[in-house]
Length: 223
Image (cartoon, rainbow, N blue to C red; front, side, top):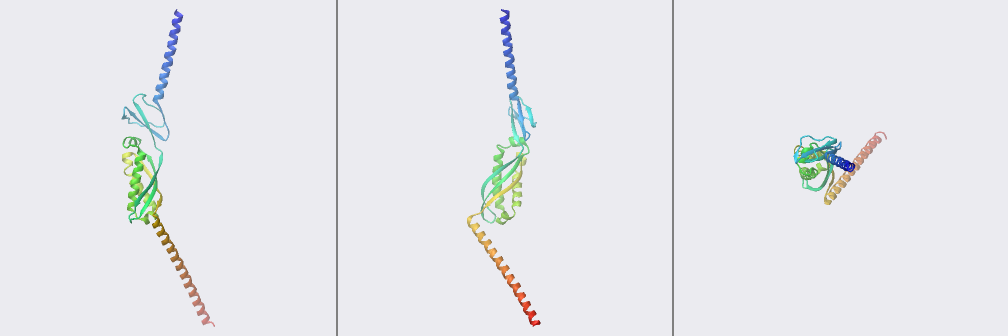
């Protein structure tokens, strides 16, 4: 009888140890979070923000009540879909661009704005139309670096301080002109080429005439 009781107690002890070990493993699984080198962890405890960011590595949080969001601090690339705009000299163009941005403050990016990549995309679209509307077509085609710099300045103002997102670079990829405008520009370029060709031909004829005159004068002086 005592042997049977000892076996029962031993079995119960083994089961209790196994249950405790499983609970420990489960709690560790719920408590350990891996933060990558290019990430920062933001922890909320029962919905309240904790002040300290979690740095890269294995980090412990409370298994109950804590929730951690990982935020990438890499530079992200965002393509802006083609936007129709009217330039300052009333030419309708279609422009697309690419935006390079990076999260500088993970807390602001999570707390102050919902879905910050989408918010940056909307800011990029409105800023693109606004900047294009203040520039004329010649500036848009010939001084694209200045347009890119102005776009970055316009976009960075509403994103960096309130959202913690810095716009690092903006590049206009393509500018599509209306077909009639492209035909007019092509005719203008062709007319300019013809004008230059005529000027060059006329200059050559003038030089030839001067040389012939000089030769005739020389022959008249020394018959």
